[in-house]
Image (tube, rainbow, N blue to C red):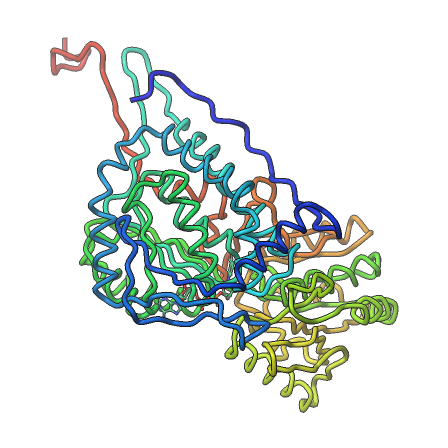
Length: 541
Ligand SMILES: NC(=O)c1ccc[n+]([C@@H]2O[C@H](COP(=O)([O-])OP(=O)(O)OC[C@H]3O[C@@H](n4cnc5c(N)ncnc54)[C@H](O)[C@@H]3O)[C@@H](O)[C@H]2O)c1
Ligand SMILES: N[C@@H](CCC=O)C(=O)O
């Protein structure tokens, strides 16, 4: 037990390295990419500290070079999910009883490993497995992940420090117990940092975890697991399983010790899991915590007073970085008529410079989308727009899956502000734009508010302070992360706590004390120093 009231190191955001030609980090990353490509990796599951190989081997291929095989992972089944739950429950007591400062040390060490010796392994695995360019990998798998780990340690202390008042003669205190049972972490393909955060945040608070990554991000998940083990996460605290989503869901949500789910992914999957949990509610020992950050239909709204070049840059970066596969990516845009020609020219100039291709060639800004299903969905949306009377493809519109799943950055202009792609998440480099009459700014905000079920991120561009304030107020429920004169992507841990409401999730703000609070069950302890010896009220004499 601790013999001091310790202060953890103050968290600071990890510096983003430049990867400029000739830089040390670039040489290291290139060497790591080469090393990963030279031999096929064989990835086991990690359950209770054991490496589990089933022989049911699934091959992994870079989305931008589908003929290349990166290696294999061993697919599990129902029995492995049960094993992982048992391992988590077995490890639980010892882990929950470990003093918090030792848990803190483990995750602070993990952050140092991420920022140091594992940086280029994580970046290279993310570049190859998830088709991110060097900059996108760096801000995700190196910087955001290190930030999650360091800031969460600080927030853990903030949670523990929340203590009640005590009146004379008594001492009230609250302890933040981990949840009873195990936590299920279910992670998406698009951010290695999110895959690292979802199991570690509950674990940091004393929980043990069963973790299933996306099948498209197993390569980086394996490197994450190596980091956790080297940092000293004990056997059974985080168990990495690759079984299909529905198989995982059946076993996990049917288990009486299921204590909570930490999910990031699509809205449809989240809603179906919530229904299953609801249907099973009588099976559980406690009411499970359901934390999910899900889809978005994120917007840019430009006012007639906007800085046109800044809007154009926000469209290009916010819409097309990482192929628009950020939940925060700008995917619907509202532009006033009087500024459209100017903005369109700037967008066109920037897009004409952008190269699409393999992320291992550092000059490519846009790389491949994650898989064939995503490619086909995006290609179909583009074709539909080309054929529609309400829409036209004004930039891009080409696609090709010969070598990898490449979609050209595409802008659809529509005359219908409720056109299908103004409403539904596509999750790719396809953005839809509507030009409104300058005097319909307020009406356009009402349309924006009622067009989509999502409320994740949004941006207003305005040099007119009254218009900026009006939009901030009028659009209050349209985004959990709202930007003024900036693109709606790129939230930084510790600076812009991230998450949305409505159909975009439970808004428990990843990388914040709000999120960590979901992984504890507080117990209030009242101690009375001199207990009463008489039952009578004073006025009874
Ligand atoms: N709001 C946020 O913070 C945030 C961040 C990143 C991604 N996202 C969202 O994630 C989505 C993209 O990620 P994705 O394609 O990996 O999402 P996804 O919903 O397809 O998958 C997420 C995880 O759920 C699993 N899964 C899929 N179907 C399942 C089922 N029927 N039962 C149980 N598990 C199942 C997947 O294997 C994966 O591990 C987008 O909708 C994006 O907006 C949101
Ligand atoms: N936090 C990231 C998005 C994560 C979702 O994919 C951003 O703000 O761009």
